[in-house]
Length: 314
Image (cartoon, rainbow, N blue to C red; front, side, top):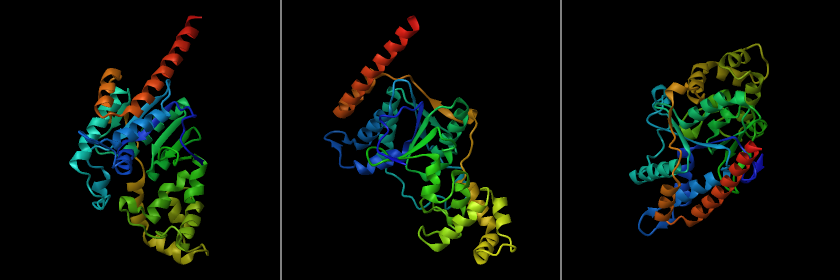
């Protein structure tokens, strides 16, 4: 794991978890207000986060949750404990999306799916090109997208963030990436209101037992069923409990597992950007810090492309 932002690292593709990061800045910078336009912390935080990872030759993507997830059809309690955001927040999201578009950011969304499903699908479509990919989110379900060593997950933004590599997942959770879904299907996920079967408390002995049993498997329900046999002497009572709740574990597994979405099912928005309109927005909200950072980025952007053009002409 590496602590701190990734401004000195170069990635070919950077994928942001749109609403996840937006909710963070809506809260963290809630006191940042404009005298006429109200709260502007959301814009300040996200635009600076984008500029911290922007490079003239990389692609920035924002993935968005649109509509109800297919997971609600599988479980009515899924995320039911979460409070809905006020209308003003969604108005700010609309403005933010416009500002990001003027920066040349690409937006992806898919009806019935969540941002993590979209990111997972994009990552899987790009792995054959061996691109270096940075995922920006605090949602641990995105661990499933760290499918090789070219992919890094940045948990949070700024100096307090940490960058998680594929090998770090086992250090954090106790199981490797390929067994993460099975592990979460057993212990549950409070943030998504998914009820666990065993080991729901992080520091409990039962959690350690679950880790041991899951690490005996290959990450599938079938292999878990095989490891819950009466023939195995260790953790007999725990294996019996898991065997008796295999259906519930499988139900959780299907909810937690990220979906691969076909390109035809995803919606993409890309306008190419408009610097004049972006500057107008930044002036309106008096986001002077963002404006200066963007100008510095554009200067660097122009220098890089001048070098590329000069190399092509020689």
